Image (tube, rainbow over all chains, first blue to last red; front, side, top):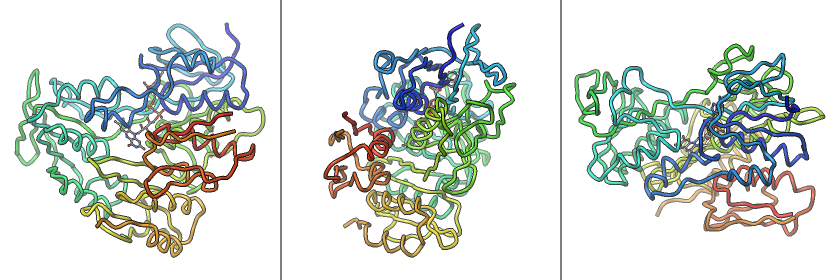
Amino acid sequence: MSTAGLVVVGAGLAGVRAVEAARRTGFAGPVTLLGSESDAPYDRPPLSKKFLTESAALKYLRTADSLRDELDVDLRLGETATAVDPATRTVTVGDQELPYAGLVIATGSTARLLPGMHGPAGVHTLRSHADAVALRSAIRPGSRVVVIGAGFIGSEFACSALHLGAHVTVLEAADVPLVRAVGPAMGEALGGLHVRHGIDVRCGALVEAVIGRDTVEAVRLADGQVLPADVVLVGVGAAPVTDWLRGSGLTIEDGVVCDATLNAGAPGVYAAGDVARWHNPTFDRSMRLEHWTSAAEQGAVAGRNAVATGGPETCDVVPYFWSDWVSDRIQFVGVPESDEAVTVVGSAETGDLLALYRTGDRVTGALGVNQRRAVLRLRLMIGQRADWQAAVELARSTTVRSR
Amino acid sequence: MEVRIDAAACVGHGVCEALAPHIFEVDDDGKAQVVAPSLDEADRSDVENAVNQCPEQALRLLG
Ligand SMILES: Cc1cc2nc3c(=O)[nH]c(=O)nc-3n(C[C@H](O)[C@H](O)[C@H](O)COP(=O)(O)OP(=O)(O)OC[C@H]3O[C@@H](n4cnc5c(N)ncnc54)[C@H](O)[C@@H]3O)c2cc1C
């Protein structure tokens, strides 16, 4: 049996940042990085954007050679961990029991499915390189595309498909799109941006069935309407990949439950990225994020903590995500739950919206459309627990107005 | 220690500036610039965080 070192399960963004950070702290023991996918670790955000619209090449986070040669990582692609035993400190991979001193769980999330609707060809989800390749070859000018779910992935895909000349309809079960991500008022505002781009968004639309035996033909709604479709994208959210942890004794509640240091409740075991639900000290509450920068940040913290000889560090995050809709960049910082969301300048339709979220007398969130300078300054302020009035003043002075 | 910014890759997310405003600033063209006159060891962890969290992987730390 090999010596126990750092084992990282999941070769995505959080996993790569974990091995990089562990090495940077000077950890010289063995490092193993396990990934189910056969590709070297790659970047997901372009998959719904440039990968489709510009046929861009897959963007790697690090090549296999650089992981192996520069970081001395035992990179095992195409291998899936099936169990963890915190008592014996081992991870099961195939018929092997891999010992660990420190473990980082970075298995990410997977696209949620709609029961009974994924049978016929032409019904897709979008999470992996393989998914994006399939969608890229399915969409042609004139294709009839139906997107189920007006979340960020569905919205970006709708924009990209439109750009490629497809006819796009977006169906959303809720009355307002993007409520969970940006709250009701601003979800409504962002829906207006789709209208400006010429995308048909139908809210309150309940999908009853996908019609077609071998190949998809149409989508039927609960009100009886039938929408003909060549391509259907199901974009109804992502679920953390935790099935393989059943029986580990770790607490799983919509993610691996962790403390403020990302520790999962067993010695040496940490979680990071989309799979982690941790206590974020900045907002003093538990959260699970599905955002790029926090996955990178958590990965680095978890990697350092898993090999640390001293006490672990906490992971303080002001959530940030961006989304690109045709040529408009949407950015959100902080958390959407608040006492009120106030538009400070502009509007989504004119492509220059800036809105602030207030909780008590603090600023706790900000949403911008093409307002990057203001948004990043507000991220700093939210982290410093800044006062509402100061944020409003800053917002007024740094925003840009379209024309 | 030196930090290089790939101006072609940078699209002005401003993640670096929000992490380390004394080192980085996004200019009016939406490109990050290094504004610190010099970097020393005390800046290392800030710069590393910015490099790690740049969504476009436009930053590189040398030395
Ligand atoms: C199409 C798309 C567009 C996006 N756009 C944006 C955006 O614009 N802005 C933004 O902020 N965020 C965006 N995101 C979200 C962002 O990409 C994720 O938050 C990020 O990838 C999370 O990284 P992760 O390492 O936690 O998980 P992942 O990237 O999912 O990596 C986890 C890896 O672990 C592997 N794995 C799972 N189980 C096992 C196992 N048992 N054994 C071994 N390996 C396993 C998986 O195969 C996967 O490769 C987007 C996501 C997608 C899919």
